[in-house]
Length: 320
Image 1 (spheres, rainbow, N blue to C red):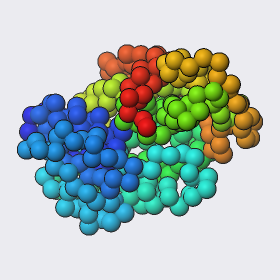
Image 2 (image 1 turned 60 degrees about the vertical axis):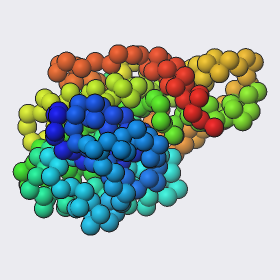
Image 3 (image 1 turned 90 degrees about the vertical axis):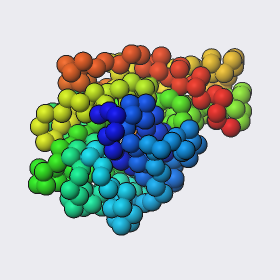
Image 4 (image 1 turned 180 degrees about the vertical axis):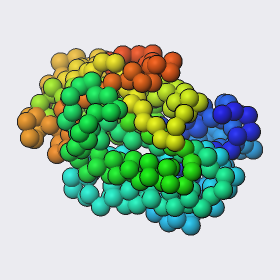
């Protein structure tokens, strides 16, 4: 992809989507961002608003007529629009059905009627694996998500595979580890920074503090997505995207405190639910096997702890 290629990015004003937009614009692409701004912000793409190669369309994938107009002449669609908050699914499961499954179905119906779209790229999640053996490869035989969020993403994967094979376009699914970096508005790092700004003397930690996961900086994530796109072979491909190591929640808390220059903080570990999880549906141990992408020439530039530390530094001047 490069100069003159026209692409659509759903959720392009959001965290990962806006970083992808930056990379695509730098490559000389014509970029259409489609976003309802429920979790994204125009501030994330503000520097492109007056660029002739950029177009912003405010719309909602729940309304199929909105996206049909945005698709015109786009050869590649990056589908990043979703409700990214895993915790909300235990209380309001309909949010993830509507904003993930129904929204993806509507997009696929629009693609089915398009004569221009050749490739669809979808950001899925490591939570589709559930509590799997680690490191978890793409061909892991038992996909048993334990959150409605993970289930909704797995349902989207199924629809995308079926539509790609039935209607003649290519599709790539990226199962993402915890992606962190500037512009992020949710997740454990953002949560800790906000809590410590409100009370620099103690920090509540959900769960038992031992939850251990892979964290990847958003710049590495975007590099992986674009590399996979350039290497697609069959009609449907799945890639894991993550770091090669893990970091636990208590260590993240200590990194955040250190970067904020805070000493003597009292860590209030809640103990969590269901064996120390932070919330219902929280996967305690996650590490992806990323050998498939590495064989194509990609690898993360940073370890998990380094990505966390860089993210804290990026966020401190922006989170109020």
